[in-house]
Image (cartoon, rainbow, N blue to C red):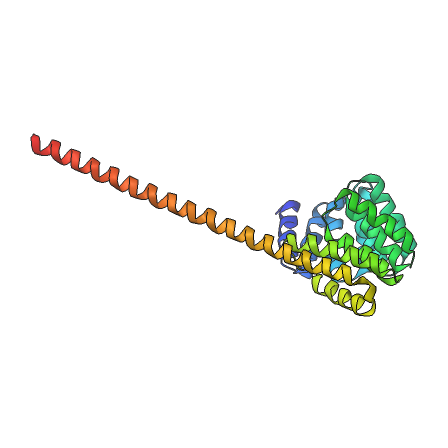
Length: 256
């Protein structure tokens, strides 16, 4: 069995959440090729999923020693460092990841999350804005901005960001985190009566999104109904042609 076979087996186990078993497969792959950075990276991801962040960092360090140009090694090492509150080290890794690949918005988002936990709110906002420039439809970036504004008691801006997050998350039929945002919106609006006009905007937008979703479903229903109609017509037409073919041949046979 080759190192790649063990890698494939490990990947399948990882995708099914069997991280301990996946680690064993990656270790087998490393026995065959101990200088392959990707195998250490995969082990690191498993340990990160298991929340063994120190072990994850160790594996990412090994991956970096063999391939320092892969931004994913630095990005995931940074996430692991953030989770054990080594914030400055985490930021250093995110900066390397950004330098290698400035087109991945998650690099800026991860750096923003680290700065947010350090309570460096203005710097965190700047990083979230950079992420939004690259991907303006990723709702989690607006949630993160909303959380910053919420914590500094700028409720009006927080509400604006949460509304954007709901718009993008619900249009993509992805409800992750939406209930938490709604609860924060309720808290903001009940405590700040001056934001009533924003609530009306939120309600109107919700109704518009719901209408658009229902309209989309209706269009899909019409499309498939029409498609089904065409298929049935084609089937009937083929039957007619088939019967016509039988009748013609039957007549020919009787004439002979």
